[in-house]
Image (cartoon, rainbow, N blue to C red; front, top):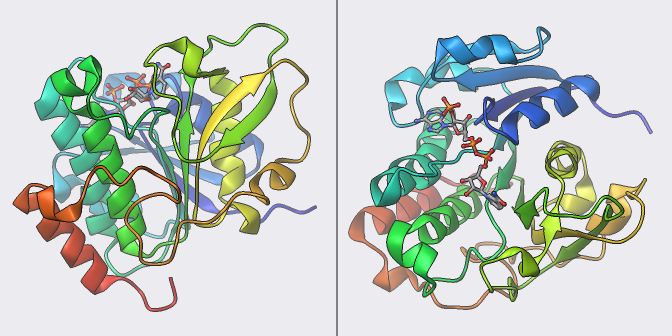
Length: 267
Ligand SMILES: NC(=O)c1ccc[n+]([C@@H]2O[C@H](COP(=O)([O-])OP(=O)(O)OC[C@H]3O[C@@H](n4cnc5c(N)ncnc54)[C@H](OP(=O)(O)O)[C@@H]3O)[C@@H](O)[C@H]2O)c1
């Protein structure tokens, strides 16, 4: 199969997953643009990647990054920055990049986390990181853009023989430790990049883990049986309805309502 060549923006490009996404997208012969907030980290990226400077918390820095892109992969993380970081980066960063894109169309791959719908665990109560990542999912769905949302298990906690990918829906694994499932960073990057060109991955939200066995050769065969997110819905298909829009902070309701009002009719 010939993979179409796209211009792919990676948001979170200097992170532990984003760096691998850049490498994988270069390997799949896409033109890769890496959003970098710290110029000192640009040298870590493959020379084929075009580096654009920008900070997702500053919308005025983002217009050059989104100009002319066909696809955007989000692997942002605000780990260690508490509730303020979660709100401004994990959620606000995605909202701001989509805002900079405006009415232009792009394929989206968003990475969040297994257990993202768990609101009552200690991690979310301390950081609100799950809630903010889930809001980033909602803003992507509300945009009407063609999307895939990947919720990986624990990074690199898989055993050396565990590369058989398993895609789950409904987010029912919520122990908050590696017993929820694990997956190699490199396989997460591969799934994110491959989803951009897959009709079978369109409008699908899934948890991604690995079990004993070899890596799959055909990712489309794994995407195909999954249920798509219902058109116009803010939650992933089969997610718990434990985050009603009416209970959301006013600023989030305003963002989502503005996105829904502006969504393309052909999304
Ligand atoms: N560890 C796990 O097992 C696991 C499992 C599932 C999900 N997750 C989640 O996955 C996320 C990403 O993981 P990771 O390991 O790739 O994170 P990471 O290494 O911390 O990378 C985060 C990326 O976001 C960028 N970033 C942060 N704030 C930014 C801003 N204001 N403007 C532009 N870029 C910004 C960082 O840039 P800099 O390099 O400049 O800081 C970096 O490129 C985390 O939030 C984590 O919670 C983790």
